[in-house]
Picture (cartoon, rainbow, N blue to C red):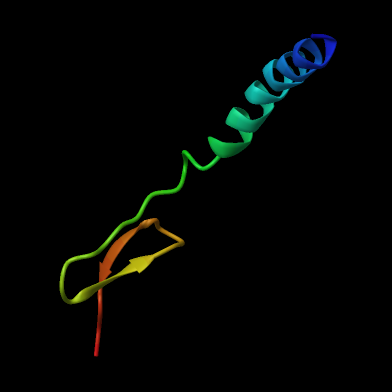
Length: 51
């Protein structure tokens, strides 16, 4: 019985830590530009390509 309580306590203590580690990529997004333009990381927008 003591082992079950210890495991349950350890699980409850570790769950918030693991959930915070999994949710740290909220600021990353995928972006695609229209045909004939490319993404410029300096201006953080799509700019027309010049050939």
